[in-house]
Every structure is written in C-alpha cells, then in structure tokens.
Image (cartoon, rainbow, N blue to C red):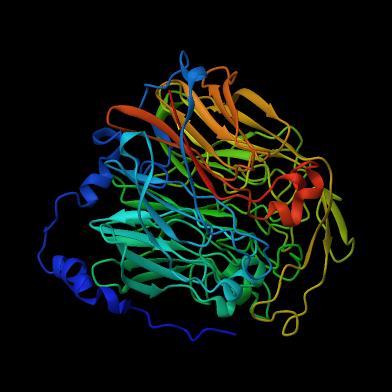
Length: 598
C-alpha cells in the first residue's frame, strides 16, 4: 500500500534533543563548528589539504576522481593484496527487483569510513589498524515494495555526504536523512521525492554552502524531473529547479505539442553533479525525455533533457545549458557526471566541463559559457549519426527545422517503422559509472559499453497512456547482441583517443586515477584491475568472485594507502541486459566491501 506522504521536515523522536542541540543549535551561532566538523572550507580544500581522506562522492568538487596518494604505484601495485573485507546487508528483494546491488562510493574521514548498501542503510566503520570495525549501522527502514516497484533500473544507493557532524544520505523512497556521525541516530529526515508519482532517489547528495543538492530518478515513468536544494541548518527547501520548463519559462517552446507533453517529459537527474566555487556554478546532467522511444509524442528539441545545465547555487536558476541529443529517440540520456578540468586546448587556456555521453561521444564544453570545444567518438561502433558538427557539436544529421528528429535511417523506432537498431544500444556507450581524470598526464578515462540493440516503438496516446507508477516508455529494447567494453583514455588537450584496454564485458563500475600512475576499475564478472595510467597495460588483477557494479576509491590511514571497492552486481543489468552478456547470469548476488593494500 501507498505510504502517506510524510511531512517535509521531521525530527526523529529518539534524537530530538541531539538534533536541536547539534543541528539547529549550531546553526544559530554563525561560524560555529565543532572539532572534526566537515565544513564548507574543508570541502573546498579536500584534495589539496586532506589527500588521505575521500570527503566527496567524486573525491573533489571537480569530479576528477583523482587521488594524490602515490604509495601504491606502477612499480609495486602487482604486490597488492586483500587487507580486509566487510559483509554488508541490503541484498533483500523489493518491488520488481530480486535483490539489491552495490553502486556506492565509500567516504573516508580521518580513519572512519561511511558506506551504504543498496537499500540505503549507512554503515560507519573504523578503518584504523588495517581492518574494518563496525561502529554503527543506520537502517532508514526504506519502504522496499513501494519504492522498488518504480525503481526503473535496480535497487541502488550511491553513497553519503558529510556535513558538519552529520552524515547526509538519501533513500530510494524519496527521503533526505541526517544521521549523527558519532551515535548513528537519525537527527532528522525530509521527504524530497514522491514514489506516488514514481520519483525515486539513488544518487549521493552534493553538499554546497550548507545545502544538500538532490537529483531524482523516474523518467521511464513519466515524471517531470528536477534538482532540489535543502538547507541543512533548518531542513527547509531552498529551491527546486524543474528540468522540464513549464509554459512561460525559458525553453518551454521546445515542447511543440498541444497536449502538455512537458508534464510527463522525464529529464531525471539521478547522478551526483559537480561544483566550481570560483565560478559559483553547479554542473548537473539531465536524463532522457519521456516517453523514451516515441519521440513523435513530444515534438521539438525537448529542453532540458539530454543536457548539461549550469546552475546558480543560491537560486537554482540555469546559467547556461548545452543539449547533446535533441528530441532523443534512443534513450541516450546525459545524466552522467560533468568533470571540471582547467587545460589548454588549441593554444587557449580554458575551464572545461568533460562529459561522456550515452550517445557514444565524449564532449568538452567551456564551463564558463557552455560553448562546445571538442567532441570525440569513444565507442568502436556508432551508427546513429555520421559525426558531430565541428562548430556546434550537434549531430551532423540534426535538423533544427524538424519537429521530430529522424537521425540515421533505421536506427530509431518510429510510428511508421516500429523497429530500429542502433549502436550504441540503449544502455549507451557509457552509462552512469563515473570517469576519472589524471591532471598529471592530461588523460581522461571512460568506462565504455560496446553494444548495439534493437528497439521497438509503441505509440503513446495523450490522456490515455500515462498512468502514475506505470511504465511510460513508448516502447522498449530487445535483441541485444554480445556486449563488450573497454577503458578508453582521451587526451583532453587534443580531444584524441590515447589508448584502449578492451574487456570481455561492459564496464559497469567506474574509474579511479591516482598519482601513483595507476588507474583502477572493476568488471561485472568479478575482476578488479590496476592499469598503467599511460599505456593502459594491466599491472594487477584480483577476482572477487562476484560482479563489480561500483567505482573504486582510495584513502590512507596510519600512513598506509588502501584501495576500496564495493562488490555486488545489481542495477538494470541482471534484469534487462544479461542476454547480451552470456556468463553474467551465473554471477551470484553479493554485498561485500573489499579493501586492498600492499
């Protein structure tokens, strides 16, 4: 049954006094900070001042996922062994999903690790002494059946954020929770998303200026996407920026229908964004329009779907946007992270935003203006467009005068021809798993999916087809051919591919780059790789025995460097795509944390 929609701000009874004293009380004294608090100043300086820690979901506000630690390096990574493991919970079934999966990134602060399982329980582990000791576990009591029934693509939680003396996390059933860092007691929670209309939350929060920034999932169910900011001092919403503009708002004219298709236009935002404090801008990716495969239902370019948006953190206003695939008929959303890099391109120093899109192209944008800088095809096979316009970055077969984009003939399903076959397939050339960037080598590492698949069209009928909490996709994928993958490196200064490490299965877990010259990633059949950052030659591998669906991270405690990764294949793959990856059907569910060291 549907849960009653909870109050916007609720203080947990068991933590009432604690919440008022430590959360509300400290906010009443400007500048007050307790020892060990994670302040905005610490978050701003995290990479440079605290390389031993991992304080952000993406390691830093820039999203580079680059660690300055170098104890583990190209000369000794071959000696890396398992240091310790820890078994998490969260493998229970819920809704349409047989089990939870692990896609999170652990956070480490001063020898304490905070990690989530697929259902959003938070674990605090003391990682001193080369082991992991459980200090507490916070179970948010997620409504598994209610939210799992509308979790499009698996039961997942990608991790927490730290703010002052609190651990900030999301739940699949739409809540933002503040947990006391010392006791594990819930201080307060706020309902941000509503599963009654198929809104769910899987991404980690982004903390900017005492605000938690939240993205939402649900485009396949006809939601109207948004990004929301919550003031962590008082639990109130600061702003909510809808990604599908209403009548009278900039961009609404890109919805050309006369039956309000914008109300079910999708544009979900379920991957954690990045932040540039110097430009004071939040960068976030926006997902596919809905319905996915019936783009005739939603004529026009469909802003701000399939776009990068730069937001003013004070108001949520859009400073600029860039749309990658207008009127997308392939499910090539742009929800993935935007990596912030300062480099020289064609002799000009630029502030760049890097984005590896599901459409198979990697993009560099000027993050001050949103202007296109370069675009590079990173998949081996791409059929939906001949390429990108050198000036605008738009697909060369994009027709700005057409209300419905056709792109390459036969690659997208339509009402006239209900079957289309495209490369990349609808999982994209790169899905949500994060890239990494090595500023020393100027190389950007992409976890690639090499695929093609067939898609079919189902005509959506205005006023009839949309029903809350039911699929609103306008068709779906079928007949996946063998899906493989690679780690692909791109030189950011030239936009040229610098190397590839081919893999038998697609890369579903994400990347880590380190100053030791090693790039780490995981494989859905269980292997974890340490690659040479220059050549992509494998230097080390370890088979965990279960599928890797999460990105690695690294930290140091007591002067020793460790590499950690969550292991437990979940997400959409086992349910929707395993027919294209023969052998992965044998991978058993798990919920384990692996930690390695020399």
